[in-house]
Length: 272
Ligand SMILES: NC(=O)c1ccc[n+]([C@@H]2O[C@H](COP(=O)([O-])OP(=O)(O)OC[C@H]3O[C@@H](n4cnc5c(N)ncnc54)[C@H](O)[C@@H]3O)[C@@H](O)[C@H]2O)c1
Image (cartoon, rainbow, N blue to C red; front, top):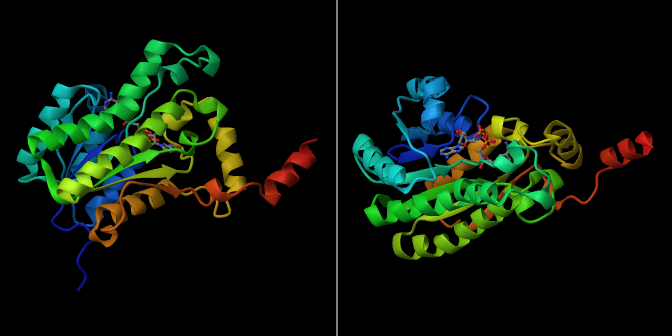
């Protein structure tokens, strides 16, 4: 019997901007595995138009929502459950934004209004999604939620700016909300801590291309590609991972457990 992994499941996928987006690849894989879902992003992204190609390819509706706006999130759940004909089995939170990074402000001189906005869009939005879905009764029992993080939540990476704090809060929400989701609804929630991947958000970070090469040279498996992140998201949404919740799972080719690599040392010595 070859049943697809996500057959019969209904989902919401945030954050697909273009074909390089982690959420875009995840949406393609969820579709291959038989899931039905809606896509959501800002009005600006919908106007730009690329997301319509993904929507057409996967037979999905695009629902406009600013993920930091509670009213938009409420409408998102109402429209999604109506469109999909039932409660939400899986939710992909794949959203981040830092105006401090965008404007190239150095970490010791952050703009605090921007800082709060970074936290609001990149971390609190997960709490708002869960809280709204919970209150509306729109989250299906035994569902699964995935968000995307980065190892700068735990260690210092100079270029990652206030996004490091946002990811630390995000991973904490995964644990704290995970308790309630699990206890009351048997819903799982996990963060995938992903290797650097060449997306619009990542390319906005100063020095990203060089760091990508560094991470590639440190990681025993090399950087984990976006496609493998999509595979992991599908696995976490599927019933194969029923016992996994409240975790940060590293999809990083071994970067987080590696102290040094011969390749990097050799390059460093040669560079001297
Ligand atoms: N690319 C990487 O190297 C990498 C590594 C680890 C984690 N991540 C995380 O993966 C997630 C997805 O980013 P990506 O790399 O695919 O980049 P991306 O630029 O393709 O996606 C970011 C998305 O966030 C959306 N967004 C921003 N503000 C929003 C708002 N107010 N409301 C709704 N949507 C909004 C954008 O429209 C875009 O679709 C982010 O959380 C990012 O931090 C990325």
